[in-house]
Length: 86
Image: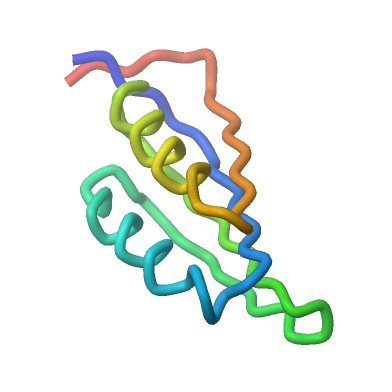
């Protein structure tokens, strides 16, 4: 199975409205998450989350797709070009 390593950047504009759903999706895909850093930027009223992931492009795309469909949530992904196999 071909896997890639990458970073998913998430900006949540309204944490009170979408924070629980964002965390629910992250828990659902915890099997591909290597590390997580979350910063509540209270002065600006946003939250910023960085995820280090290792998974298939299908799994990574499914997670980012679900997150990106939430209003007020912006998602960007950067994947390595190197492929890993299990």
